[in-house]
Amino acid sequence: MKFTIYQESRLGKRKNNEDRLAHCYSREALLLVIADGMGGHYYGEIAAQVAVQCMTESFQREADPKISDPFSFINRTMINAHNAILDFTHTHKLLDSPRTTCVACLIQDNIAHWAHVGDSRLYVIRKGRVHARTRDHSRTQLLIDQGMISPAQAPTHPDRNKIYSCLGGPQDPKIELSRKTPLEAGDVVALCTDGLWGLYSDEQLASTLKNENLMQAAPQLMEWADAHGGPSADNFSIVAVRWEDDYSESGSDNLSVIHTQTMQLGSVTTYLDQFGRNPKYKTELSDEEIERAISEIRATIQKYSK
Amino acid sequence: MAQQVNHALPVGFQLDEYRIERQLSLGGFSIVYLASNREGQSVAIKEYLPNSLALRAEGKIEPSIAEEHVPAFRYGMKCFFEEGRALARLSHPNVIRVLNFFRANNTVYMVMEYENGRSLQEFIQKNRPAITENFMRNVFTKLLNGLREVHSHKLLHLDLKPANIYMRNDYTPVLIDFGAARQTLTDDTPMLKPMYTPGFASPEHYHQRELLGPWSDIYSVGASMYACLAGAAPQAADGRREKDRLVPAMIRWERQYSDQLLEAIDWCLCLNHLYRPQSAYALQKVLTEPVGPNGTGPAAGGRKAWPGQMVEKSKTWLGQVASKFKRRAEPE
Image (cartoon, rainbow over all chains, first blue to last red):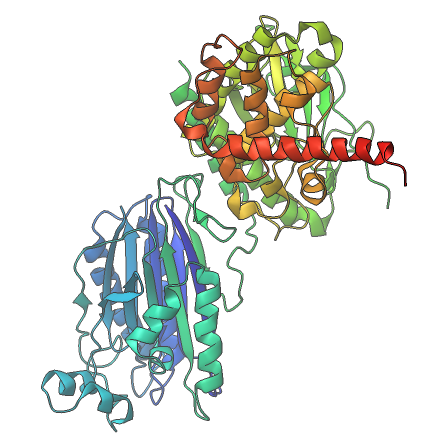
């Protein structure tokens, strides 16, 4: 797999950042997650943290190097996260259960699979247009669907923050699965919280992320959002991946492109809550990883020597 | 602080199942030893030992690594593993073969085949008359076989030069030292800078690493061929971008070698990566084409872009020479 990835979260004008995001990849699978802990409920950021951690930990356990059934993986893990949040509520005797939205996308074999609960979004942008996007589990989206309000009215509607599906909370989440979506080279898959998408139209997002250099385009979105979020700007976050052709030797190659081909089998690289800019931070090898790398190289030598 | 120098393991030292015979080379990242295995066969062993991070004092076996260097040392080890992983998958007569990989003395070792011979670098310095048209075509055609194998695994060598081309005694070349053959190590690791050798590294090596591709290795092949004929490395690519003083092979060795061979060298050495042969195969094809009656081969379709540039360049070069003469001839 070959891709460029950008992940960043900002505070906006709030005191707390309740957005959580992560991505991790093995040699043949890539997982992106974003969760927006709900303000107005206790411990929103804990719910978000639990959701993201649940997803990444399951990925680390199961990506070997692929996930055997992507949709069942996402669905099951989201339900586990929901239960983990309820357990947390119970253990800590909280009055109300913390809640969070969640979007997760799993890419393997050039196919994107995703699911969402709540109003954090996933966009697939192809050739400067929105090729696919999730439909929010929100009151305003329902009203739009019923023809009660126009899309233009949604951003200012009094119920714009009400969502009817989330992880945590008394009701079971309504997890909406996507179709299998084959990716083409140059496609951008972007996950973002309402703090970000609320400031842009779909067209604006698509045309900004059309830029070949994702490491330029995505920060541009964040910069502008920071400047135009207003006095009570919500936390806003993005995880975006630009999918590259596996077979081209180079082409639009640049330094930030991640090649998973020489990764160790069975290893997973995880970036959880990296609020910094450069995702290529150093990772230290543990003794166990060294042993594993050596035995893998030895196995390859065996395999190829006749 | 003076650059520290690592001491090699002593002769006769028993390292795993191998006995150290002598040190073959010492680099910034590693030491290579000649050793023998239990059956008494010779092998080359590469020891991961970046001298900026780990120091082996005289008479010591285990290198000492300062606490603050441990993460960087381990990170570099990751790259050493990548080299091992890359080579382990390659099984080709013109690419060095990895035989074993193990951990000892707080660091890691890669065991490679060793055969009698010497580096092309040594060879061209000692055997100038042997560098014939046939020798060149023969050696580089075979070398390109190895390079094709490397590229087909989506790897780039990135440090091709006569010193990294090993010549067996039967004149078959072997690509060695894949220490630079990785794409992930970039400028954000200050302790382990990307490696290249001036004169052989392509222009993209210096400033536009996002443009690195098979054509970058091709530049290095061209530079190595040029060095074979010249006996010294050509002008470094970054210098050529400032002021190109490289005399085209077509002009420097006119009539001493076939036009076709010389053209191929100049083709590889185009500063613009798009004008070079785009694959090892494209270059190999030219080197194996029969030489035509005037020493020129049939023009290949893919080469249409460059002769124009070549002629332009020869003209400007000739122009410069001519204008010098003119100036001399004309009274001020």
